[in-house]
Amino acid sequence: QVQFVESGGGSVQPGGSLRLSCTASGFIFSKQNMNWYRQAPGKERELVATISSLGGSRNYADSVKGRFTISRDNVKNVVYLQMNMLKPEDTAVYYCNARIDGFNYWGQGTQVTVSS
Image 1 (spheres, rainbow, N blue to C red):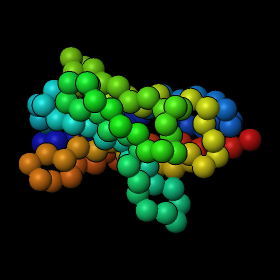
Image 2: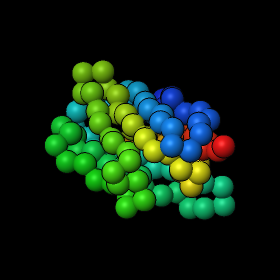
Image 3: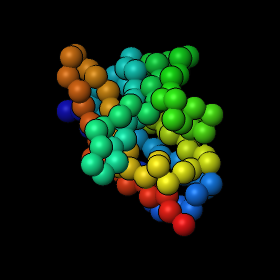
């Protein structure tokens, strides 16, 4: 059974940092590309960052380039999202995601709030 458990969200002031973690189980983690999405109130869910199965390729939404870093640990089955220089517009629920055998799997999400 595929499962993702996110953690690390919280409230932070503009300019601050947070690191999100997503622990995966139920599939061969090292064979799957992993994604972070986010959804702000009243907006559609958007792709934030993607990392390839072995970590050699990473892609980011234009809105987070230079501020966010996606990484993974294929021994611990964890994918991370390091978020620096946070802005109020980064406020959203952040979700871990993988597409496995044609099906999208999601974590429960973790809330990130950026406010002064």
